[in-house]
Amino acid sequence: MVFAAQAGALAFLFVSVAAAQPTRPVDPGEMKHAERLQTEAKEIDAGAAKAMSPEGQKRITDTIAKQFKVDPSVVTSLRNRRIGFGEATVALALSQELMKQDKSLTQQRALDQILAKRAGGEGWGRIAQDLGLKLGRVRAEVERAEKQVARLDRGDKVAKDRGEKMERGDKVENMDSKPVRMDRPEKAGRSGR
Image 1 (tube, rainbow, N blue to C red):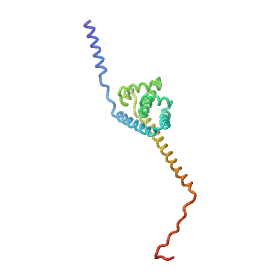
Image 2: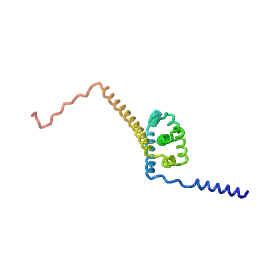
Image 3: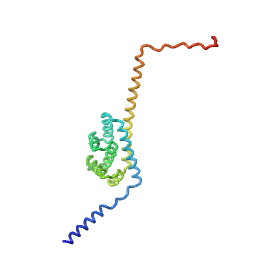
Image 4: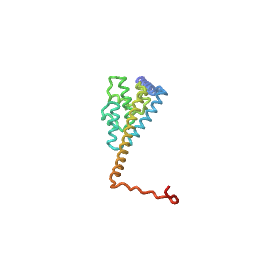
């Protein structure tokens, strides 16, 4: 009986030590990609924050969904998990790379795998390393999405500016008469040349 208890304690100790073994460090090149991914995610969130109206949020959702060829409801469900547009974009990009690697995975299963690791406190670099993914292609997809979100923001500004210019143009058209041109006074001391 004592031997069984000692064996159980030894097995527990072995499992605990094995689980506590440090994983290999993330490659420095991949760390740079991971840091850049985090920056891109923040830029997407900053661009999305400018589109505060529900229509603006929908346009951003549709843009990200179109970029990753998913239904907008996928992006909406990620947002409902209290994930920003930037984090959702990175998760979608990682899930697509994971699906390329493992053809049997569905989009939802790939996302669940990635989000479970993220919820466990892992960074993008560690998640990519654990899943055997390279962040270069992921980063390229996220940058492309960030540019599209920024383009949406610029489009909103241009449309707003055009609206203001049209209003100014309307004011000029509403004037009843043109201003009368004033004659220039002659300068003293100079009589007609």
